[in-house]
Image 1 (cartoon, rainbow, N blue to C red):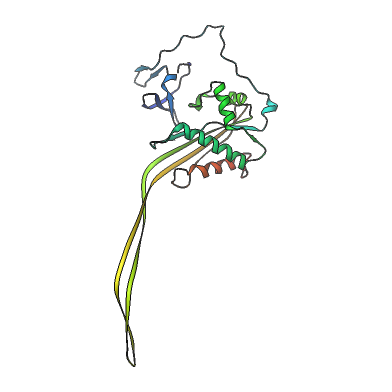
Image 2: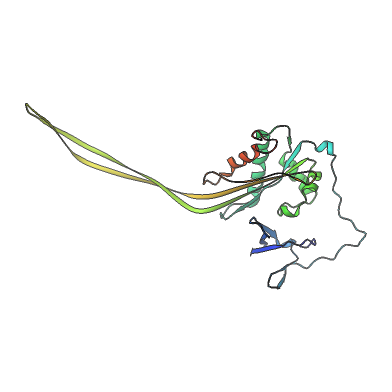
Length: 259
């Protein structure tokens, strides 16, 4: 990377402005902005230069300082970061979904937990922007540093992966009879005869079938992992992630369903 960091894994694909990438041993797919990449060294030995690395600053120069909050002020406060959102569904805006999931999760934490103070996502995002922290690559961000910058004891990393598996069709059929009855009688028997027409109808509904997986990780202001769970959503709708988020949040150490 242009900042000197080295990421090891597998390049899945290259677009006009980003590179699709998986870390070694992981299945989660990231999009790395090309503007932050210096070069790619492939397993074959080939090197592809994306951007020329800038000259290093003089040894006496120091990076912009980020204010560190007081431990007492951070106590029992939690910040939900913008979510990672991965999908093969054309037309979905990744950044918009990321902020929507962040807001939904913050609301769920307020509703389904106790003894913590949930930071407003607008405040979280303002502090991230102020300190030039880019959440497009969560693996490159230090959770402990984030907690200090955001002024919280806990930071929440979340991701939702929605895969369009194609379409499914469901249908029903029904038959309506329009009959006329004719009866003939005699002294010893009764006979009933029916005649008429039958009308059948079929209703078929075709809908998209989605496979959704939700992951939630919580880190402390000491940099340790406090909670980590993933779960496949129940249902095949686009918004199946909503109930799964609530399920995972309720089972955090401060959730209403914690054990």
